[in-house]
Amino acid sequence: METKQFKAESKRILDMMIHSIYTHHEIFLRELISNASDAIDKIYYKALTDDSLTFDKDQYYIKVVADKDNRTLKIIDTGVGMTREELENNLGTIAKSGSLAFKNENELKDGYDIIGQFGVGFYSAFMVADVVTVISKALGSEEAYKWESKGAEGYTITPCEKDSVGTEVILKIKENTEDEKYDEYLEEYHLKEIIKKYSDFIRYPIKMDVTTSKLKEGSESEYEEVTSEQVINSMVPIWRKNKNELTQEDYDNFYAEKRYGFDKPLKSIHIKVDGAVRYNAILYIPEKIPFDYYSPEYEKGLELYSSGVLIMNKCADLLPDYFSFVKGMVDSEDLSLNISREMLQHDRQLKLIAKNINKKIKSELQSLLKNERDKYVEFYKSFGRQLKFGVYSDFGMHKEELQDLLMFYSSKEKKLVTLEEYVSRMPEEQKYIYYAVGETNERIEKLPQTELVADKGYEILYFTEDIDEFAIKVIMNYKDKEFKSVSSGDLGIEGDDTVKETAAEEAENKELFEAMKAALGDKVKAVRVSKRLKSHPVCLTADGDVSIEMEKVLNAMPNNQNIKADKVLEINVNHSVFQSLKDAFANDKEKLALYTSLLYNQALLIEGLPIEDPVEFTNNICKVMV
Image (cartoon, rainbow, N blue to C red; front, side, top):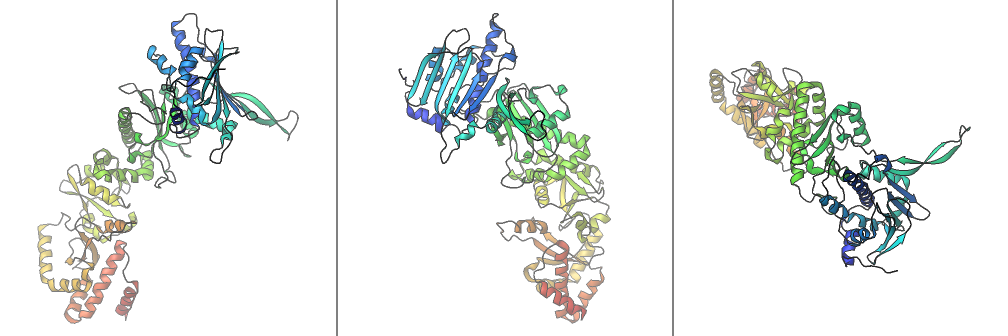
């Protein structure tokens, strides 16, 4: 029997096909099943133009048969089969695709598409098999042929017997090695797992003989193993069905089947697009945040299918980081794939799909906010932080896109509100959008710095997450209204009389404030008269772009650069404590230093900042008491 050499005539090329092109060995089954599906599709297309052929879909299937004893795995199809010449041309020439040639010669209709285009998928079988045998009988032929190869050494083609039209690919599975457990490709459960993962939506039944246990007839405790033929794949994907055929339960079941999460989706989005790039998508906004969402282990991305075959389990390029919580899948016939069908050859189509998906997700979130407020609030409590990161990242490139999705707790409404809602309620004379920063809403409520703004009747937004102020600094202003911290130097609400009074108090007590500043050293930039305090004696504010809260956040990071806010100690000159300061300044400079230190540490505690020397602080309290 003559052994023929591959027409590519290069062992290195075949070695590359087997060892370099594919990332995972399990891909071989996806490729062989895709080829089998193509073979059945070819009969369908022939039936469109040949009146002597009828296409009854129920007659066509793919079967996977594992034989552990003989270490063989068969992939059987009832497709068009191959003649001797086709075996020679399609399998004897590496990277020649019979499917691609068929696709080029025929106008494809009815949503069918030939999956195999590159002619290398078949050779992935050599990743797991020592010997690959193909037995095939072509449609309209009386003869069958056997193609067999052990790899780069070449192949043989001989006549053989086969009763029905179609193809059997028989793999002699390799023995286990230290690195690879080839036995798993003979295990029923693992084969089912691979089929469900990659080929669940092949349009023809993929059958296997499945063994199950059941009670013996007449017995209450004795079981017996029963083997039956079962269809493993779902065949008709949910995304190819019309929306009016589907219920929310169908979408929820798909979410659970694909293990997108253990919760129920808060929102499902079904997209069908017939445009420059055709694609279908099912997207989900989860109800609960995954436990590892903010960890390095979390992988964003959507499942990417090409004509129903899984190409990538996590295609990160389909989602921007700020929508990384979205789960789901995209299926397109128009993707340009590389030779292994594991990666995209060109990203133009993907970029277009990603752009459209991004718009759709934003639109659905806006709809949720407008029409199902409670659901949006639930979503926002889980993923609002991610939207704020999206505003802050990339130097604020996405702020216009995301700012209307943000929400913050309102001092007036006592609930989460949007920036648009805040601005719509602003009195005409109010210049700024005011916010206060703290660890909790309750702590912010008690901040001395909020007094003046609250007395004016102005609404204050409460920032309780470390990202909040950074995001707002990037937005800068919303609908021509600038953001202003209640702790900033100039609140923009002091009248002329207040300004004059403050200037007079500053001038009158200049030496006192200088003495207090000297006692504190570089802990503060200045000691000043407060224009914002009403009932509290003291507070800290910040000059410059770095606020006290931002200092806390930045210094808590691993790469702590010891960034400091320019702190100002503000004194309420209308508080009884101020008289004690004046008396101490006039009569006892040591007591002034003591009072100054106590007031500074009191202001630190109010801000949630650590006291630098707790022992000194407690000793100072004792001194005052004595």
